[in-house]
Amino acid sequence: MARTRARRLLQHLFALSTCTTAVAAQDRLDGTWQGYWTRAGDTVAVTMVVRQDSTAGYAATFEADRLRVSGIPFAAVRVRGCCDVTLVLRGDRTTTEFAGRLDGDSLTGVLREEGNEGRFAYSRAQAAPPTVEEREITFSNGAVTLAGSLLLPASGDSLPAVVFLHGSGAEGRWASRYLATRLVSHGIAALIFDKRGVGGSTGDWRRAVPDDLIGDGVAAVARLLEQPRIDRGRIGIHGHSQGGTLAPAVAVRSPSVAFVVASAAAGLPVDSVEIFSVLNAIQPGITTAEDSAGARALVRELVAVAYHGRPRARLDSLVTRLRDRPWFFELPPPADAYWSFSQVFARYRPLDWWARVRVPVLLVYGAEDRRVPAAASTERIAAALRGAGNADVAVRIFPGADHSFRLAPGASGWPRTAPDYVATLVGWLAQR
Image (cartoon, rainbow, N blue to C red; front, side, top):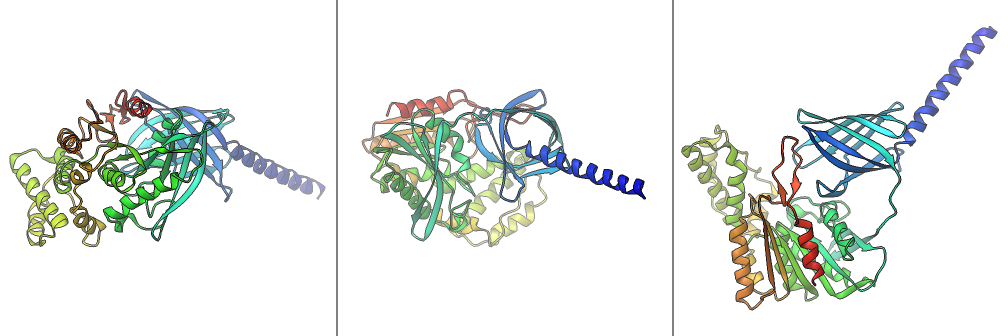
């Protein structure tokens, strides 16, 4: 009997010890980790920050200068037992899973993305002292409340500042964080915010019309005017893609905008840009003259229906006839916001707004942009500005760069940023 009790006591103590060890190991995941991802002979330096959340689980973010990202959240962090760690990163098109083993101050394992495999390794690091002051901030445009972050240098007053406008889709403040932090490191404050219906912002970007999004940008500029460390005479805007296309309207409607950086902004009618973008997206599947003719017919008819309200009969007929082609793509469902937004957006004429902009403008494009025609857009926007008497127009087109200013990736799939892209933005702003 005594031997049985002793055995049970030892089992209980062993179980308690194992549980305590597991908890302690999980606690060690919390903190800053520096390391790398490697795949197909290519290596990316990465810093990861893991924090325990209110549910006793974990949340993690990462930054990588090579990938031009900062504060990007992992979709999930899972810990099994004492030491098995899984992190899930979901992108626009792919999901990457990191499965690793925690061993003291190191975390190593395998990363997998769509059948491709690589390795990752992290070592625990001391958290760097903060160089950026970040403040949560809200502002309103009508009934919509927009939530964002004001990023400030740790010291200094009368700071110039930039409001970041959104690209298309469900874009949160994280999308602009990297560029924003680079500006802050050069003494320029930045306001990044969640698009309506994303993150902490109310409303619904799917139902927004251009005037709504323009108004959101104007409201963001107005909110900056209330900040004590901001120079009210040196507030500008940076817009990429859709944000760059709407930027001139924000600058015209807000007299407080002192400069504009328009990145991959459309300078052609928006329906023409849509045709250009969709055809480029399906181009890899087009191998014959017959395919080319069919693809062009379908895309032009899609845009005619979506942007100009043409009846769907011919479009539906083309879909039936061309569905088996290798380049074919499924159209958005009838209830999708694509149809309503396109028809409203078709009435937006960017060149009319550019002709009314009187402040300094920087236009930046990637020469290999497949979503916005770079050369034609640059030529038309610059002509509209200069034709209206605005001579303070700078243009930079980066050779080999795509819509997001990245160069073609190698076997790893990880791109590189066009040389001097960030330096060009910072240098132009520094002159102002």
